[in-house]
Image (cartoon, rainbow, N blue to C red; front, side, top):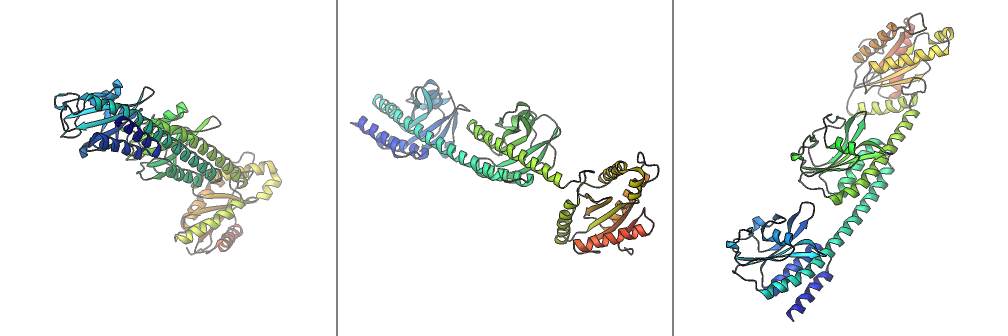
Length: 490
C-alpha cells in the first residue's frame, strides 16, 4: 500500500504543475513526508559543463546551498556517472563523501534518469549511521522514476515557454528595427531591444569600415573601455575569429582566453555573432555578461536569428542613407547641395542658440567664372568647380559643411567657430585656390569670400545669410581675391 501511495503522490506531482521549482519542492516534500528525511537535495545535470548543479535542498548547511559537483566526484557524482544508486552507511569512513552538512552520517544518492539518460540526482541524508535499508532504497528508487518524469515535463514546458518568449522577442525586434532608416537610431534601438529580451548585461554593435571594426553602439550596465567611433585594436581577437569563421563564438571565461580584447571592464563571458548580409560580414553583435559561463548553446540559435534581422536592417539603413546622400549631394562636385545646406544651417543655428555657441558662415564665389566658362568652355569650367570643391573639403574639418550653393557659389558652415577663426580658414582657402595651377587654365583662378558670425551678425538663418552675402558683395566690389568679414571692427 505504501508503494501505491508513493506512486500516486508522485503522479500528482507530475500532473499538478509544470513549474520546475514547484516540482522540485514537491519531490522533496514527498521524501520528507513518506521517508521522514529532513535532509535532501536535488541536483540537475548541466550537459554543457558535466556538473551536477544544486537546484533545491532542505537541511543542508548554508555554505553548501549552491554546490556544483563534477560528474564522477563524491557519492552524488558517482551515482550519476554509474547510473545507479550509491549508498554510504557511514560517511565518516567513506572517502567519496563530500560534506554538505556536519551532522550527516549516512547518504544515499539516486540518479534521476529517463531512457538511460541522467537528468540529475536525488540526494538523501540522515543523521543516523546505516539509516537506509533495502526496502527504503527500493522505494526511493521507484519514486525517483516518477520524479524524473515530473522534472522532464517541467523542463520541456520551461523550454517551450522560453522558445515562445524568444520567438516573440525576435518578432518584436524585426518589427521595430525594419521600420527605422537612420543608422544611429537603428543601432541604439536594436541594442535596447536585445537587452530587454535576452539575458545579458550589455549589448554592443561593431561595424566594419574598411579592414577595421568600429564601435558603433551599445547599451547595458557594464563599463565600456571604448567610445562610440573608436576602432577595435587590429590584434586577433574573438570578434575577428567570429568574422573569419562566419559563425558565432561563445567565450565562457574571457580571463582564460588568449588574444581577448576587452570591450567592457566587467565582462567575464561573451557571445559574439557575425552580422552577415548577402554573404558578406558587415560587423559583429556582442552580448556581454559579468558572470562566467553565462551563455548557453541554447542561446545561440535564437540570437543568430536576431543577428540576421539586425544585419538586414543595418544594410537597409545604409542603402537608405546612400540614397539620401545622393539627394543631398551635388551631382557635379560631390559636395553637399543647397537643399542640405538649408537643412543644416537651421539645425546648427538652433544648436548654437541652445548651447550658447558661436557659428560662422562663409559665402564663396569664384571670381570671373562666367568669363572663364566663355573663354575655355564648360567642360573646363566644370573641372575647375570639381577641383575647388576638393580643395575646400581637404582644408576644412569633418564637422564643417561644404556646399555648392548654386553655379560658381559655395557656402561653408563652420560650427563652434568664431568670426576671427573663420577668417583664418577663409584666407587659407583663398591662398590655396590662387596658388593652384588648374590644367588648361593659363591664368590664376581666385575666390572671394564673405563671412558672418552667429549671433553677432545674425540671430537666425535669414539675418546670417544676408550678412554673409553683403560681406561677399563687399569683397567683390573691393577688387576680388580677398576675404571680408561682415563686421570690419571685429
